[in-house]
View 1 (cartoon, rainbow, N blue to C red):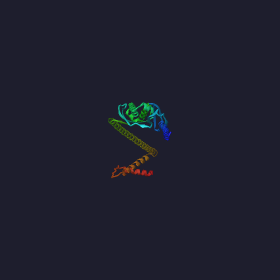
View 2 (view 1 turned 180 degrees about the vertical axis):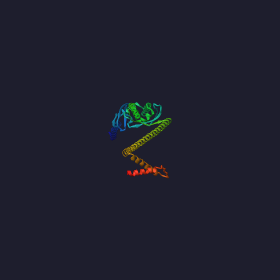
View 3 (view 1 turned 90 degrees about the vertical axis):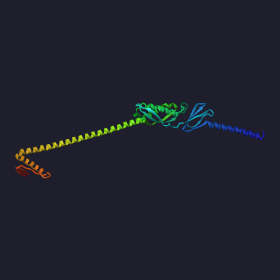
View 4 (view 1 turned 60 degrees about the vertical axis):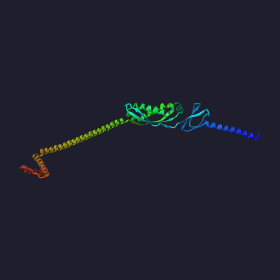
Length: 297
């Protein structure tokens, strides 16, 4: 055997080893699957579901198993949807909704539903129409949180067979047609006018009540003053009566003279020119009164 034959034999054996090494390396590469944290891989064997690979390093059988689907398990948001609904009091409303979901069982999603987004959108639309149809318009506006909870609960129960978890369902807006808006605006204006009239009437009623209380208080005070004055006059009369009983006619003349002097003082204290006409015997009477006053002092 010459040198050339030896070299050819060595090259041939080395080539086989190289090819074998490459084949083993290829099998290793095709049998090892590294799954990202945000995904799951669906593995099929001869067209049938074999397994679901989770995040990390996974092994499959080369040439027999293949990764048929790579499914993202991140939370997804459906585009905002608008659908019409009719309330129980026959008001047409346009409802804008948004749904967030994530795939938790890819094997169900892959083999049970073709278009996940369209299926969820249709389900949400039906549930929203059903729930709003049970409410009146005022309830839809006031109980939006309870409506959201009902939609989320029912959507979650219906999409469970698809391996989907509904994380959030939001009702972004509830719009009315122009005719309904105009009617509600008129109703709102009428309610505001009614409240203003009620407030004004209550204010007037309160003012009348306060005025009546003030008048009653003034009357009570005036009555009290009159009673005090009457008591004072009664007391003065009683004093005079006692004086007359004790001193006789002189006490009575003294009292009359005192009243006459007080009357003259009041007449003289007036403003302007005044003329006082007195009887002929008035001077003597006043003189006697002054004498009695001096005597009394």
